Length: 430
Image (cartoon, rainbow, N blue to C red; front, side):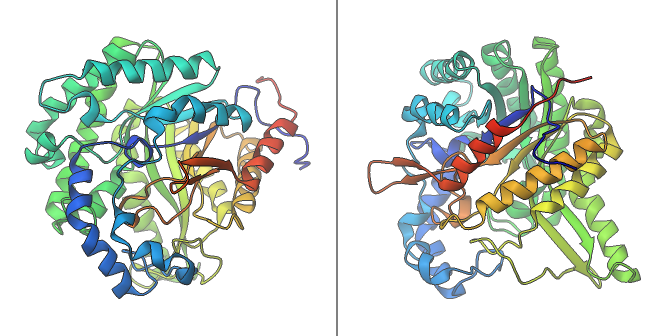
């Protein structure tokens, strides 16, 4: 295949993703409360782990990030990168990078800070936000929920209690009424599998519980939440394209012909990748997924990845693993696919271009084999707050210097990406 002559369709969505809590600044929700009460503990734990993340992954450049990772202020989102106030400036960066789509989040705690009380100024802000994207010809992709929730909702038990979905339905109805006519794409829930496991099995995120039964409840309540949202949104605007953004891994057997490795691989693929999708398959217009990992399993459910190459956060990097995931997702669901996130933590910008290049090759290969792929959204447009790891991981196409008035600087890999997008010879759909 001659990759100099692209087979991407003319309306392919080249974009970037963000989430409200990670970049906006000034939020007050269950995460901000947790950050403030755990910042010192997280900093001390980072020092004790001596170069490993919360999940035990080895940080290859620990010496360079140690000062940040052991500083309590690293774990407080605070002013974010001031995207709430600088969004017009950031949208101009999208244009410079030749990106035609943008996935963003609505912060539930901003528009409903108190139970049943809507903040009209916050709602107006998001209306203006969407209008600005539309004015610039950038496709807005709205994400309704990305881990954070109002403190009042968390105090009621959050997504553990099925009865709390009545508050979710009211929130989604408000989204439909205020924004549903001015957008085409909506993602209801981001990474339901990650949220359930990190918050209720591993106990690394609020509310930091290690209760598998609670995790199961959260998963099933998220399934119900998505289905309910789908119905509400479609009633408001039947033309909306609705899906989720699950986290999928390219799960492989370490020893392909070993019976135990093969068994573990099949189990993990089903539980992690397909369990949620199978239960919402009639309630999605596209298959949205985030890709960061290729994981190799051996023995009985033991992950054993190669030792190199690693990203800054200790994740084994295999960008070409995107291809088999696209093939499997297409074979299972035969619905349009959007890669809703994919990226790499790389503060020195050593690997990002390679990651992007390999992803492009994987996508072209999948499209050439009949996969209806509609878009690729890089994570993230800006350096952002990476949840319990804080500020030190750098995922952005655009670097942000929080010590120098939030100065934005386009990284060289992003400039290459923009040039690549421009160079493609796009085709008309048959």
